[in-house]
Length: 194
Image 1 (cartoon, rainbow, N blue to C red):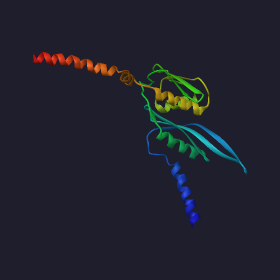
Image 2: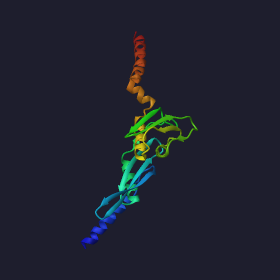
Image 3: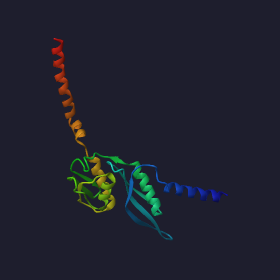
Image 4: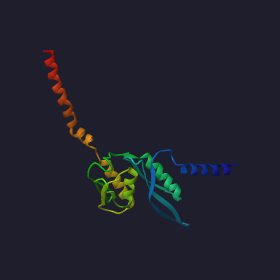
């Protein structure tokens, strides 16, 4: 009886991991690697999956999942990617400005492109842009070609992107513009009172 319950619990757990979370977005598998652990009886094989999830409108997440089966590894990675999604500004179909992202030994340089240029980037970086909804961008790998580090470097670069309004607030230009009209309104009110 207890053995049957244990088997049932394991089955339910496996089914739970296969069930996709109800959320919008496109899931793409970037890379799957087979790993081996040497144990007393021989080798124990496992799988590592790198997955990107994006909504096609400036929101994207990347994660790695590990398991004994490919589908379980992909499922785990997808769940982690959805939990850790980032949002970045999009100008039309491109990014707002030039930026370099670094992760480990990998560096990714990216620059906004004119409409109709397309995504000019390497394999992993291209999949991140497509999931995020970027259609025109120039990108170049400047360091390691490890797919995991390249994708995470791309994510770091996307985190650094800022739109014009955010930069103006940081520089204090928006406050100065708001104060200027108020200064003009005060004399007009005083003139009306006199």
